[in-house]
Length: 195
Image (cartoon, rainbow, N blue to C red; front, side, top):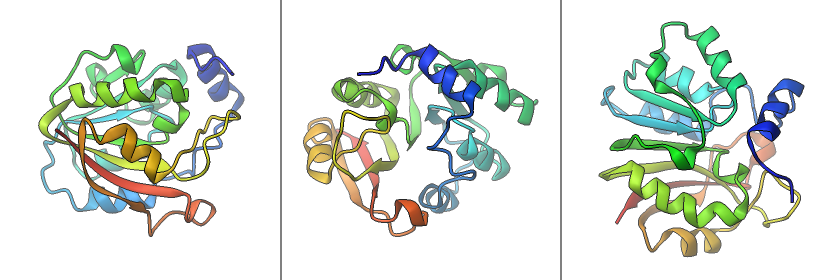
């Protein structure tokens, strides 16, 4: 299996190999963000990518968003696009080493599926520790068979329930009705709350 470390991800950015990037905020996440009224929510986006969700949140007036990535190039791109974005909220490093917490909301968009599947139990526990007791983990998970050829790595509703249900209340987990056409039927929109 590939070693999915800093060097791997930085090479992806340098080579422009970002097949996960659709070029704009994902419609299911945009729809969810559009329903949020508290612009002071403390929000985390793990895995920066081209930061379409961050750009959209900023454009919509959200003032307390953090983003973390193990690779430097996406963070440098954010600095160029949003020169006034607070430096202390652009976090370079391993998500599992993150020591900031009390998030109201964590937005999941292609980060989970980019991790080695053996890290999934660790992801669940880390997400629980990062959220406030009334916080929410919201986003998209891929709904296609788990393979060794990723990233991205898939999974199924049953696998995700078995993985998360011990630590999270599963408020919603169903096929996204507003995925982009190439991902139609292959994305599950979810809302999980820590137990």
